[in-house]
Image 1 (cartoon, rainbow, N blue to C red):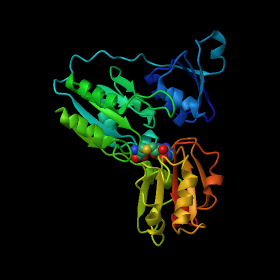
Image 2 (image 1 turned 90 degrees about the horizontal axis):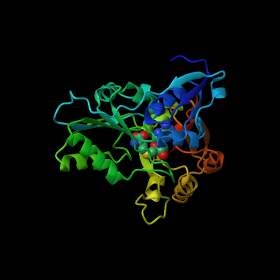
Image 3 (image 1 turned 180 degrees about the horizontal axis):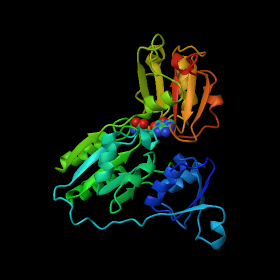
Image 4 (image 1 turned 135 degrees about the vertical axis):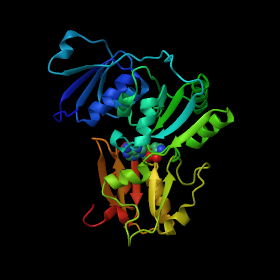
Length: 325
Ligand code: SAH
């Protein structure tokens, strides 16, 4: 769809198919309002991040003035009678958010799926490629809100595949980069369910790239280290040696690190990394709301104070390549 930027789009209904339409409209530059008394977690998440407006009520006549109206299709959950006996699970890496960054093999798997189990950071617009009868299950984990446990997700994949259906497990980025892909694969294999992997474009390299940051720019970095900032340095669950990282000479890419960025920067500085080392934070990469903040190891936490997840932080000379930054 080619929309004039700022087109007001009204989506009536908040089920998971509506979430696909919402994501596509957002990617096309529309200002989206969803009207539905209740919504699927993926829509709640987009509203919580301020990317769309959600009015939790029924439609009334005045809503239609000046808006393009889109009605979501009903979810078809009736199994297709032509479904083959032996089901399967395909872990599909959805890339960082723009459906254009999903692989051709990933798209083919979505188009052929009987069931899609989709995550919060998956490119939801890709759900519009699913066949009308495909069952879509929203297992978005909203930080501090609604979520589906990993055990339940594993069970869902196995149950649906055992009933003879082709299941796509759609995640953001690459399923094997902080995506629990290994666990889901093992759950399938242990249950005797055929499973395969379609790797995805990980945000660890793609999101910096979209902000003009080549993680291994020649002459600046001979490697990059991707870490999770889920727990801060010094936390009992942290297994990262920040002092070693500080002197390793590689670019440092931090995922899930918005809350812990200042503690991580302090640990790296304590470990001997120069405080004037360039640093950047890229939020909502590959989405219309993408933002980039650039500073140094000493100042990035303050510069990025207003940034909310999802965001990737990059620390190293590559965050400030003359001509690209
Ligand atoms: N499997 C994913 C990573 C999952 S962990 C991948 O390979 O990309 C979730 C973290 O990924 C977020 O906290 C954020 O750090 C990063 N992330 C994912 N999508 C992002 C995006 N579009 N923009 C910025 N960061 C993103």
